[in-house]
Length: 239
Image 1 (cartoon, helix red, strand yellow):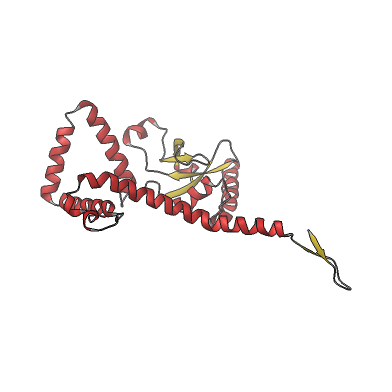
Image 2 (tube, rainbow, N blue to C red):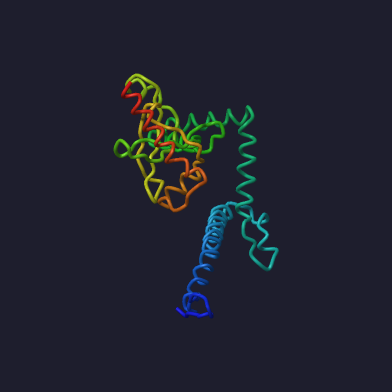
């Protein structure tokens, strides 16, 4: 660390050249790292879909034979158009009738029947525009009273599960693990034990995957919400 001394003033420290190079390097890494990873993921997705769809396409639909270079993304475009057209035809009466016939045929296959219904239910839950699953975030006390963690609020339990639970309104929640939010615990809890917070699932996922390093705008209010809930429960117990 070099020092510069000015007359009638304090000694001012100036970073060494090596420290400045190190700072410049990490600054460049922070700028280019996320961009590079994003481009790689997009390219991997486009290339994967192209490899799946192109063998199923008629040769005349591919622009590669007519051009001196490869055009990426044609399979993605064809898949998007094909799924959109399929959804359009499935929305009318004839399409729904064909779907019912196909599902009736699958329903007669012992192994395929269970697999198809499970996968269909997962897709309907994730991509349904009218559903409420995993669109809300809440706080619960876990793993011990006074310790709060973030959960994703799912759908209410089915009638079969509700009949076996204690009396009162319940909700199902998913408690993700850090740093991999795809694994965790699935609970049925009384509605009164879950505190809904004004945080989007995307912000909650970022908070969990970063172990608190990426703080969303609503993170500042989480501590206050947890404290308010704690005081409320203590008052309820005292009353």
